[in-house]
Image (cartoon, rainbow, N blue to C red; front, top):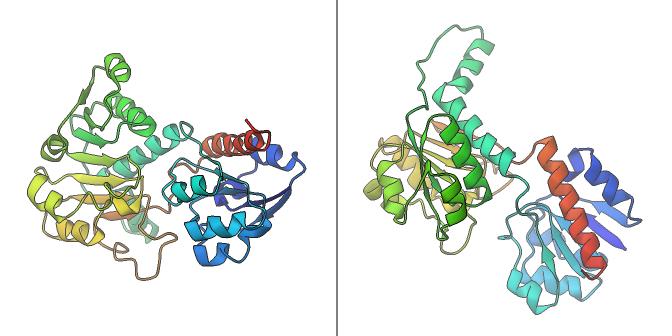
Length: 312
């Protein structure tokens, strides 16, 4: 069986996940994703299966794949927004992903970004690297209110960590997990998203990219609903925010900062509008890129493929 592997995290991190994959007897080809539709179309029919990252599995790619050998798609990671699931179902291609494996890593990354910004670590690092001893005044996060939009696995883990750090936690989700909320009464569940916009000092996004969530953080939200000049953190998908509205909000004092681990177009393009803007920190989609998380996700992705092949 011939398998295409495109996840760079999987490839760059030696561990049990690689040992498991290469012990299966498959023929493995590797490319460094994310792979656009134009590059997948000429080659996808050659492969029985893919272990992919955020590649463009459009209907055209899936249709071309099934005209050849393609039978299985195993997604390394959680988000399925780059895979046309309707087309996969239409052409009989099963798709599996890896939920519930990266929440520790991503929630820690949210806090790393927040501490970096509030303590001016990025500015102080660059300053002392140049031999300067200029000192900025930072901010404490204890006592601040964090609004978590999306109370899935990552949102829940962040809620627990933020509360332990002395933050007041507000959370919104379209699904109310009564069991979690009963176990964690320190988390205040809000049925109205506007309450997050009104009361949060920090807003952290933890939801998938869908037509409904695309550019949910827009000028209307930033200029008419947000009240406290919050820090906005996005470790989910770049398409959740209107980048131009965020820049305008920062310049006009409606937002304090935008801390992003994701962009609408990845890898970052040369003319990325968020690049170099004051009070914006960008990391290159590494929230789940820890050894522990990569090994967990990679092993699950391979095991998902093995189960598909075995008809499970």
